[in-house]
Length: 472
Ligand SMILES: [Fe+2]
Ligand SMILES: [Fe+2]
Image 1 (tube, rainbow, N blue to C red):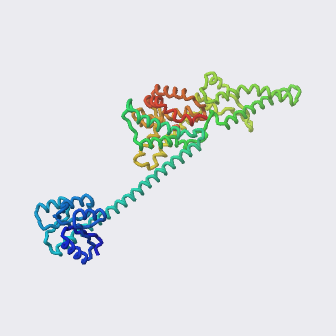
Image 2: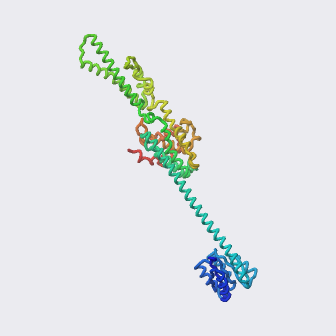
Image 3: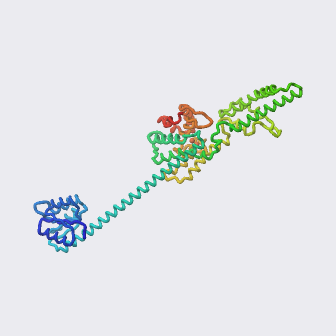
């Protein structure tokens, strides 16, 4: 019937045996102890749901001492004090020591059983509650594990998505290979230096782990919008696209032929000799004369700064003409060719420059569509401001210093540095580290980049973080 164990502690053997037999006959599992010491021994060996104890047991510890010891050793056991000398004081003491009940000798068996049934009922409820609670805790634990697992899955998904996006940008424009991850390393490196630096304008600034993660993702994706820029613009190394240059050279050759033919016709009219060799010679002469035009075009085609004297000589290029297949005459250099060759610096026309610059807006639009978790909510805005400059001369919004997120100021320094040092642009060669740092310093002085961020970049030698990846 009742699976719970009951212990009777009483120094009177007859009384103890009587109770044992009576309770056993009712189906309880009962044991007896003649002293507090023996009772404690048993309590150490096994758990009893209910322990009845006498108050006075001569020659050893009292029932009150036993209550106290049980309370310490097995607080889940329910104790009931039995005594023939019931006083209010003894009852108070017993309850203070954690007794559940108090029963006064002499008592009838039915009173003892009533007390036992009550204690067991209470005991059972407590144990069931405990079991319920621990089941609940287990369930909460399981759910927590599940949620943590999901969170990890989501983070892995984000990480994978960011990696795939970076691969997409770099596949589009192989010359910028590695740029995104180097900028991420440098910007995170700078953020960590800010965290370690207690003084200066950013002395009080501390980025949380979550913010550092946000900075890393924003840096990895800052140029993603380049997927929205036409490839020929993205990788354009010279002012004229190769097929345009080829067409111009072809037209020049055509012009040489025309002139040679007309000189031959003139000689023919005058009755001069008509040998193949003389035609070849004429063509050679024409070709020699055209060579300086080709040299001029090739010099103008380079993305370096266009020197004044070259720009002046371009007028003669504009007037060159040749005969089309149909006989009508046309200019060797079309209006767009002349405009391209007249670009004063770099390889891009104003429209092409605008198109490249639009990558920032593409990046922002793309990133704004992703439902970033709360800790990453600023990511699109951070990436959006990576070409903004403190003096308002940046793009696309022309923000000024206090409107630009600090994270973007860190990214701007890393981005400019990497673009210089890594030779990742089609129109220019790599710049040495020392020269790149000099250029960064000039840009801080010109009010473009943040001077304190540059100081940290330099003093903490953040720029060294990617040295091994830009060489070779
Ligand atoms: Fe960019
Ligand atoms: Fe960039």
